[in-house]
Image (cartoon, rainbow, N blue to C red; front, side):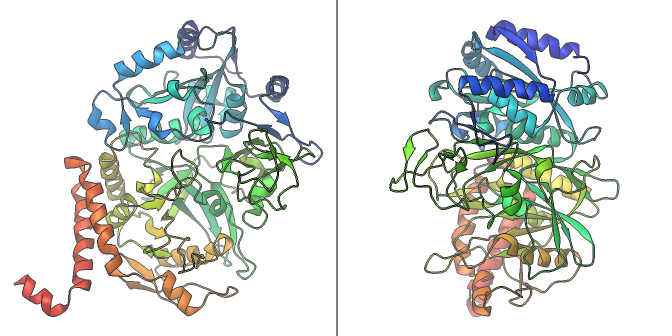
Length: 599
């Protein structure tokens, strides 16, 4: 492994003096290291070996029953000025954060091994890439970080070519796993994060949401780029042209399924490639376009619902070298979850290791159970995955899980309007975060839990980035989840979402039929290719329906949300809000009444 910079050694010594581990191990990312860690985890029960004939290199981990999702109410942004964190974040001052957490870290690693994990986010040698060092006492975290990031010499070599002190300091300890002593605290002004009391991925794999989004969003504002909760997808048309889109959806919304889309047989000649399924770092290019890389090297996906039918690429890639978390275990040593290809087993051990049968009301796998697997195993992985320059983005999609009101797809008039559409995104909650499921929640850019600073400033930064681009991507809203009166989905989804993406790309190329509505440009009923699917004109009309009366309530809710940010909300967002309100008013109010009112 490349030589350790003095700044890393000094920091490790400081943390070691505080946490008092039995030993300190620097991780090098080697296969030998992986096998040693796995052997120790099997001996301690932290991992369970799965059937190696059927699933070579696969293991099961069970987390504590109260440690199964991101704990957003215990996640903090610690800035000197509370307004810099904004109303979208929990805030503690840096002095209060250290006063609260330092006693929790005191001797927290006594009797344990401290692992020092240098890791690289992004392709080696790329201007996009950032280095972090995670200190942790969890072998499970080390094994997952080895999959999700580029660990060891590659990180130190990248650091030596930039600035040996310019790395994110990521401190993690399991502590005693008590929810009462659980905190995830980010210090964006110091490029650091402290996490204690949780072993769950989103709280403990500090290269993921903590660095790649919360801290990176702060760095992106400072440096003039975007760090986003987005998949990156390549689409090759039958003519051979390859274009790239990004899409931002709330967690457990279907990002991985879309990122690994398999074109339907009724659309011959199309090919889809996966650049990323969760996070995109986007920088302006010299040609005035926006370029994106996926900073991760693996996939940390939701398992329930993953099958050959829903996502064959994901299903196949998790058949080897995969860590499963909180799924059920069948007697033959293979995992099972709700939505698996196989029917429910007659008996199994559930995600907590308890005997389970289909007669029980409880689910066998936790709704937020996960897989961690190397990106290299994905059959649809893009040949541009490691491109240090990134890929040029034609379109950005923002997705909402809405049963009513929001049409299947619509297009923003321009970048400012698109930023407004993304800023007012709201969706029904899923199991990826602690709390109730199915509640309508505002989630701007699908970044509400992940933006490391005041979202009003974030919207302003978005507007600024758009102004700097000669050829900004077109922006669209999508909603695969609209239902009929019986609660059944109107759109087939999955691979057939390519039909919507085809229209999106047509619009980017100056083609594609659309009609103006108060909310944006919506496809005409005949604009989306329905060859090979049973979607009638009436159903299509329902999917694309925009009822201005239904949007009155939405406009009022948007105004309340925007006002919650006070004077920091940029004027451009208010302009778009007022424009929407006026257009809806004009459509709903009869012409003769409008004329009298105006005078």
